[in-house]
Amino acid sequence: MLYNSEDLLNMIHLTKSDILHLAKLSGLTLTEKEVKELSYDLSSVITFFEELKETNTKNILPTSQTTGLENITRADKIDTNQTLSLEDVMYNANDNKNNLFKVPIILKK
Amino acid sequence: MNKYIPVIGLEVHIELSTVSKMFCSCSALHFAKEPNTQVCPTCLGLPGAMPYPNKIAIKDVLKFGLATNSKVNKFSKFDRKHYMYPDLPKSYQISQYDLPFCINGKISLKSGKTINLRRIHLEEDTAKLQHYEDETGQYSLIDFNRSGVALCEMVTEPDFENVDDVIEFLKEIQLIVRYLGISQADMEKGSMRLEANLSLRPEKDSILPDYKIELKNINSFRFLEKALNYEIQRQADLLNKGVKVAQETRGFDQLKNTTFSQRIKEEAQDYRYFPEPDIPPFRFEDKFIFVIKSEIGEMPQEKRVRFANDYKIPQNYIEVLLSDKKRSEYFDKLAELDKKYSIGLNTIANLMVNKNLDQEYPEPELFIKKLLEITKKDYSTTDENTNAVYEVLHEFPKAVSDYNSGKGAVIGFLVGMVQKKLGGKGNPKVITDMLILNLKSPK
Ligand SMILES: [Zn+2]
Image (cartoon, rainbow over all chains, first blue to last red; front, top):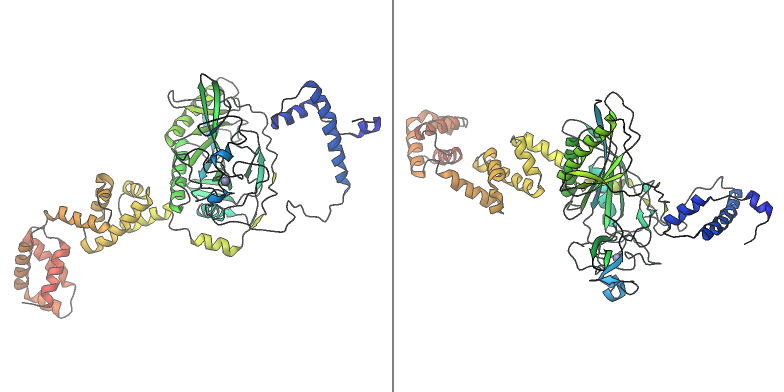
C-alpha cells in the first residue's frame, strides 16, 4: 500500500507497542518487518474508520442489535442430537490423548 | 510497627445445576464423565455456531440476586469478554459487562455488619485443562464437557476487614445457594470457586491501598482462611520494612501453608468487551421478577430466627441443623410430631446433632417412635400409671366433679397428684390422656 504525504500527516499512528500489544492479545508472533507493515496498515484502516465521526448520531440511541428481538431463551433440556461423536470432535485436532485435546503446555510451573 | 487493617473483597463463582448448558443443549452434568462426550459446535466454539440462552439459568441468577437483596437490572444483556487461552477456543467468553442481571445486593453478618454485593452476573464456564509432564515433554490436555456450563459470578465490594467475616459470609452464600437449589456449591467438585483480593491499609488511614493481591485457585474455606492469614502477615511485614507490595496473583501452597506468586504477567488486562451480537437483550417485567421472588422459599437467616424463636433450642444446634436444608426440614417435622409426645425439642435436637439419630430413621415418625422407646424406661409402666390414676380419681372427688362441670384447668392439679404418686416418673402426655379418658367415662 502506498501513501502520499498528506495521508501520512492526517493518519492516526499506531506505535510499535500498540502493535505488539494487539499481537499478544491475538496470540500472534510478529517479525520486525511485520510489525512495521502492520502499524502502517492498521493505522490506515483506523484512519478510514475516522470518517464515521462525520455521521450525525445526535438523535440515535446506541444499540448492539438490529432485530428488535428480546428475551430469547430456550427450555432447560438436553438435546443429544446436537452432541457430536468423539470422531467428529477430534476431527480437526492436531493431537489427542485418551480423547482429550493435547496442546503444548500452558502453565509453566 | 504500624497496625494495619485488611481490605478484602471476594469473587465467588457458582456453577449452576441446570440440566443443560448455558448456550447449547448439551448435558451440563460434567463431573466424572467421559471426556469430550458432551460437546457440540456451540460449546466447542466452532465458527458459526449460535448461542441460545438457557431460561432456567437466567431465572436462577435472578433468584440468587433477589435472595441476596440485590436489584435486578430490568434491562440486561450478554457481552463478549475476549482473551486467548486454550480453555476458550472461540477466544471470547460470553459474559456480562456493564449490565449484569443483578447489582447492589446486601448480606448481613451476625455482628450486624453489612457486606455489599457489587454485582451478580451469568457467564459460560470454560473447558477443563490438566497439565502433564512425561517422556514426551510437557503438555496440557483439554476436556470440553465443562465448556459452556452456566456459571454465576458474584463480586463483593472490598468490605471485609477480617478473615472470620470472610468465612462466615462464604458459608452463608453457600447455604443460600443450596437452599435455593440452584447449585450444589460443592468446592471439591468445583461447583463453588473462590477468589479473594486483599491489601492492607494503615489503621489510622481510611484511604484504600494502591495495590491489591489476588488469591486464586483456592478450593476450600480452610485453605482460604490460611491463605488470607498468611497474606496479611506477609504484606504487613513488607509494609513495615518500607517495601512496596507488588501487585500480583498468588496461589496457595497446601503443604507449606504459604502463598506463592503465580507470575501471571500483569500486563494491563484488555478484554475488549462488546455486546454479544448473537443474543438479543433481556427486559424483565415487574411481574416476572415478582413471580421469581415468590418462588424463593425460607432463606437460612429466616430459618435461623424462626428456630430460635419457636423452638428455643441452643444456637449451636440451630447452626448444625440449618447447615443441611433437608435436616432442618426433618427437624420441623419432629417438632410438629413432638407437640403430641412432649419429648422435648432440646432432647430431640441433641440426638440429631450429637448422635445423628436422624441418619438411621429416614422417617421422622420412626425417629419419634424410637425415641419414645428409649425414653420409656425412664417412665413409669402402664400398670403403675393405671393404679396411680385410679387412686387419685378416688382421693379427689371434688376435683373430678369440678372437671365434669367444665373446669378443665383442674386437670393440671390431677396430673400433678398422679406424678406425686409416681415419684415424677410419669409421662405427662400419657397420664393426661389417661385422666381425660377416665374422667369422661368414670368407672
Ligand atoms: Zn454444547
